[in-house]
Image 1 (cartoon, rainbow, N blue to C red):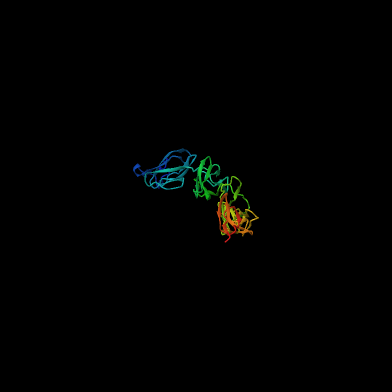
Image 2: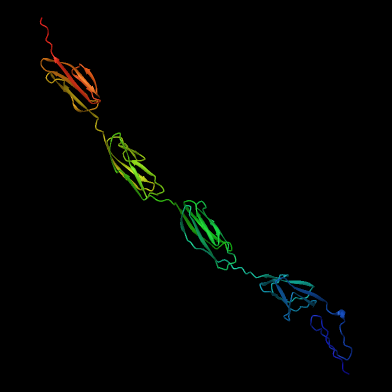
Length: 379
């Protein structure tokens, strides 16, 4: 007698349940429904940015596995969408493809993130190097970020000494530097995308003055008398020089002094007057001082009548001021002195002193008058 083929029952996970062999003809024992292994649900979910791929290559956002307790379910693979990358599963696993042993019902989520498309800054450069500027000047410096497609193209600008020069971002990848005062500063440009990418230049600010290139004096020699003075003029070149200041000095103040170009003779001798510009250019004037010749006046002496007498004087002609001149009237025989007429500045005076002394302080004319001697009456 032939027995019917009975298919081996399944355990619910795709695995067949073993059927014990039968040694004799009889009824085949089949497990009851209550004896089947208990099943649990393992739910796989794809978060934003990806999908789940089943063993048959189909994709979906959710796959549910019903697996008998203690058995391992079929594999599931987390697949990232374009522009995303797989991160991990919610239980911390970082393996995209997984299969899980059934212990309890659970939900596992595959996490994804957007790919980092940031292009990092690798360098920064300026179109000018170290430079000199003048006070009040403005310079524009071009900034280039490398590579050209860097995601962050911003930068910061800093001057190490804003009292010398300021530096600001003027926009359009241009830094504007303004010179404030004489000195030095360092301008540093730093990438916002990579603070290790920076570059610096040194700014030297100089005065914008026009320098003195020449100095001339007029006159270059002076001959003075004690007590007199003279002015020496100084000419600066170029005419538009910023600082035209000149300092004056004498090497012998006992002979001549100087102030702002005015030279005063003090005593007989020689001196050198030096004029010097603020930037050190100098010229000199040679000064010779002599004592002044004494002031003189004309002195004359005469007789009103040479037939009656003559006049002698200790000095006549050009006579120094304050000289005492003595006049003496000398009557001839039969005559006697009668008096002097002294004319000073057109004003006559008289004197009967003989000799007569006059201190010269102006032109003077002295005339002696004589008269006949009157005979004494007879006794």
